[in-house]
Image (tube, rainbow, N blue to C red; front, side, top):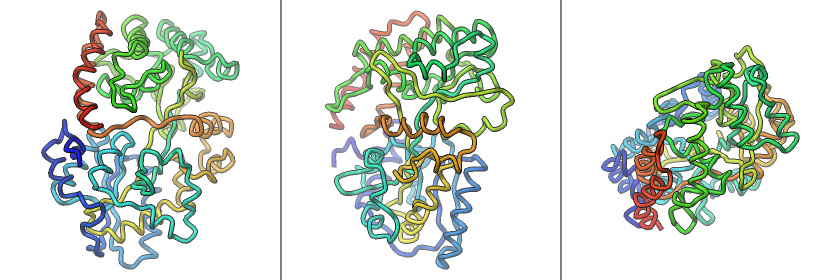
Length: 431
């Protein structure tokens, strides 16, 4: 195994990762007995509605399986989730199952810390392995092996405060989309009008960006035809298209002041912003707002319309204390019935469930048209956010080098060249 691939979080938890991945190698050859019957599942959600649904599935599994004593969903901080998970792996006390981000999939898979579940999924009566959309499995597959079930394949979309936009005399995004005029330039114009008219503090928020998580800007990058790296492991930051994408956002932040600058924060669901880029699965708080809202797919850019999908995969850990029970719970939680229940929060990877009629049964918040346009169509045409071996170190070095871009008079060309200088050795080492 390439040494660079032995790090899940080389930058933020290097020592822990090395120990964890060394212990994890063997792909399922670790603890495979019955264990103590106390299943532990690592997740990053603390949303009570999410946990209530997860616990109801767990209760049903427990009721039909006398070997299970307890099932605990351990909510880890989403901002340092992978670090905490890696530390647990290193300590020799891994959870039995856990959620994994698509950007970190390569690290966990290539370090042999996950169990290949494809044989069990194919053998399980009534499971419907062939019902899974192949394009949505790409990050989790290696040959015929499948190391996680992408229970949440959630497209990014633009949610908007229709009242704030109307009061600012900004065009309605849904109307623009129906006229094929929904572009990033149109979004920037609407955001500027909202900010200038003060119908909200800001015109646009990029969820969880905070000038730390640069990959939250991937929707803008892809709309400009830019990518952080290529399939040949070449750095993409110094490309002119990437410079244009970053400058587009910089103009919103430092000239138009229509998106928060460094150190500024706002909350869309409290009415502090006219629009937000976020995953469709995070729309729950809209049930409680008093203003009219809407949702549209990501806008078109110079490179056309590029829809972006964020994923979370459920996996069984190779060193799980209760590996056999964990496999059984995996199959139960991801079968067609439970996937349909989870679909109210987490867009599923099953073709049979990706219809507006099916999703509408568990998603009363969105209309059938909104479900079709913002979820189903986006899943069929979109691409999953790119990951890479050694993603954590790549991510940290990219963030550190990009810090210089978040100043009013930054030289974007110079900054992006510096990003490439910082990450090219890592890209080549992981090839």
